[in-house]
Length: 308
Image (cartoon, rainbow, N blue to C red; front, side, top):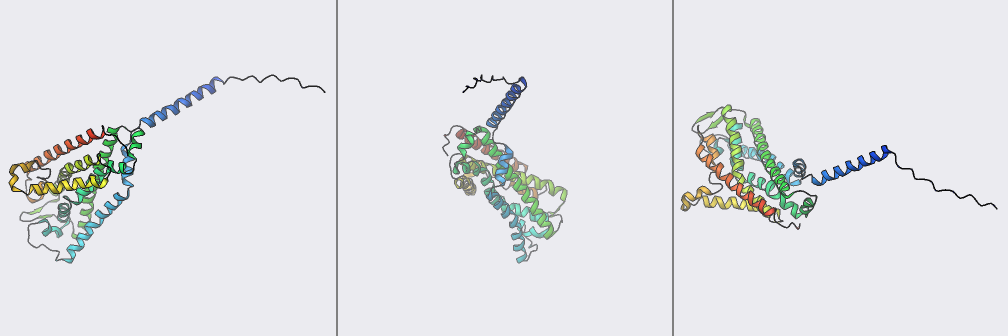
């Protein structure tokens, strides 16, 4: 029986220069993409979509959509006419402008405050309550960038809600009460050209006047794991500030309270020349309070041990 001839090992052919170059290019591309993924912080658009998809956002928008209809129904149950008074409610049914100003007046100091505290104060606290905050930081997302994104998205949602609400109320008022000029009790009527910029300025002032309490919610939100505590802190601070502002015994000390000039925007619609002095003081004090509180929030969050 003949034995088979031994076979020599097959020589290993080296990769061709083209294959080696393509492999190196592919590996470099994957490494670059991985590096960019690790370094890319939480984006504004991603956080915006997260907030938009949350059930609480849809509930809040639904409440704001139903509220003007409830008020219209309430006015319909009453006499619905001008009762001769000088308040916003006395002329609320005289046209879309009056109805819009009235709705801003009744929602600015509580409902819009709660909504703003939810958007701003709940942003970080909810991540901590879900035990997802540490995973965002491991991604890694720089703490300062994460906090900035959360804050800007919360403020943007608050501003969008306020502007959208006023536009929606104006449309409801136009359908139910017409597009007549604004009736100013004891001062005649206000033309649309004047009403438009005054409404925009009033909305901006309302938003700025809310900033100190939103900042309080934000500051508490980075310290606790309970979203309700963060939201409640801002609302409670507004209530306490209002109580202190009603005490005449405090005298000039009341000027430093965050909401001492919270209603200064009413002068846009109650008189020909707005109270620019009160408006300026209100803006400056609100920005001062907000800046200090937000700085404290950043200082604490950048140094804390995130365990949740």
